[in-house]
Image (cartoon, rainbow over all chains, first blue to last red; front, top):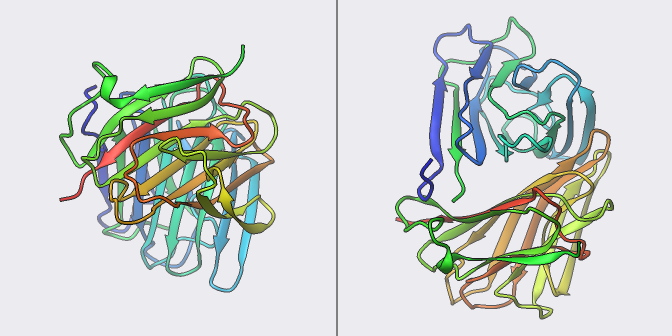
Length: 168
Length: 184
């Protein structure tokens, strides 16, 4: 694809109603170098974990290292051999808007595992960052963002946007 | 094979350099075919307001190594840096002054991701600061954190060199891309 001017919106999903538990970006083109996912989301009621899954892979192929500050103390945690990736470095998504940016670098290469960076702004619990590894050499073609509890939902007006960044 | 240097001369790239046309432009990129000591973007035009480097890199050694940046090929002790990071169990902070390198992240035996912002890089009235988010994870080990580096020089940034602080170079498949962000 033509580079030069880049940072192209691929798809935006604005949640309407109160029954959306999961948002999927599918058939992601391999035309870019990196992807950036921007989530400004909140729940209808109470808190929950927010997860990311890649290419619908439900295997134990994900791991993550996180760092956060909760207003009182700072900490760092790790997950290994998980079936999903956490958006939140600490705490949960809640009824107040939370902002995440996720950068997935070199997402379509088929030689290396995939590394991605999360940056979180969470009004309720903490601020933080994390790095995640998906142990697969497959090109990333789909992203699923979903609440842990099937009966919990994104609030109406939550936005999830996927951008493509193409190197020259 | 011995590591080598690779330079990407923005002004000399044919077919891969694009005239500024949007708010976020790709300026130059490289993907390594073999272990290479450093990656340099040179002849960077001053036509943007900010720069961003997106680095997908693996250090040439299996040990923990900082990822470094050098501006305008300045090898003097003109860099100051700070870092705040977590290693999966604890949080730590560190800094250095009179460094010959700025530090932008860290990596160990796995491809890690680093995004570096260089704000107001062409301004000649103030020192230049870089900030970065960087991390790597290897299913049981990993670091993630924030880094900032100050370059004690008021010159416009026209060259950026990325390198392993330990001198190990970057392995094959490491990729680095430079983007320009325009102001209104």
